[in-house]
Length: 317
Image (cartoon, rainbow, N blue to C red; front, side, top):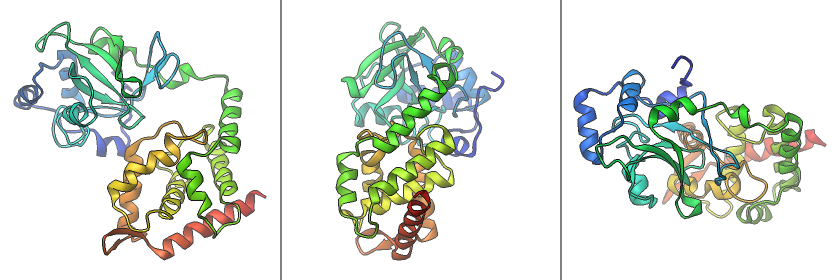
C-alpha cells in the first residue's frame, strides 16, 4: 500500500480519523446492520479513511462520469467524527435516507459529483454477514448499479491514476479551451450575469478567468489554490445579485447550479470540501459578514472582487 494515500491537509481534515478499536468496529457494524469486509477493516486500522492517490476504477459500461471508468473522491473512515465517515453526518445512513440510495448495503466512498453517485458494499447476494461485492450507484440514472469488483481488496488493487484514461494531451487542452471560450452558460449563471452593471462584459471576464485556469492547470477545474478561490469569490458575488442575504446552506446548495454541474461552461464536477473550506474562510475574514436575517457579502469584499475581475479582463485584452 506504499503511496496509496494522498495525505494532503484537506484529506486529513475531512476524512482521516484515528485507527478504530475493535469495540468501535463492532459498534459501527451494529449501527449499520452489516459486518464490514475484513480487508476494509484491516486497511482502516493502518490508515482510517482518506483520499487515495489513485482514484479511478475501470468499467465495462458507461456511467454519468465517463465512458470507461468511475472516479472516487475519498474513502470513509470507520467512525463518527468526520462528516464523511461511515456513521458521520454525511455518511452511509445519510446517503440512503436523504439521497434515496438503495438499501443494498453500505456507502463507503464518495465521488466528485458531490452526492450524485457513490461507491457501495453490496450485500444482496452474500447477506449482512458475508463478503460484499463493490458497486457504483448512479443517482442521475435512476440509481443504476454498475458492478465494479468482487470484493474490497480487488477494488483497492484495481484503482488506477486518472492519467490512464487521459485523451491526447493536446486534444484535451483544446477541449478545455473550447469549454471556457464558447461553452453555453447555465441558466442560473446567464441570469446572474444579466443583472451585472459594474462590469461592461462580465461574461467575457468570466471566460477570461476560465482561460487562466485552463492555462495554469491544463484543464478546467477548481480546487484550493488562489485562482480557484477567486473563481469561488466571483460566483458568490454573482449569486448575491439574487440573494443579498443568505445562509451558508443556501449558497452551498445552489453552487453546483452556477458552474460546477450545469451548462456547457462547466467544470463537470467539484469537491465540496474545497468550496465549504473557502466559504468558512471568507466568513472568518469578514468578507462574508453577519446580517440581520443571515449572511451578506461585505461591500468592501464585493468591490474588491469586481476590481480584480475587471482588472484581469483588461489585462487579457
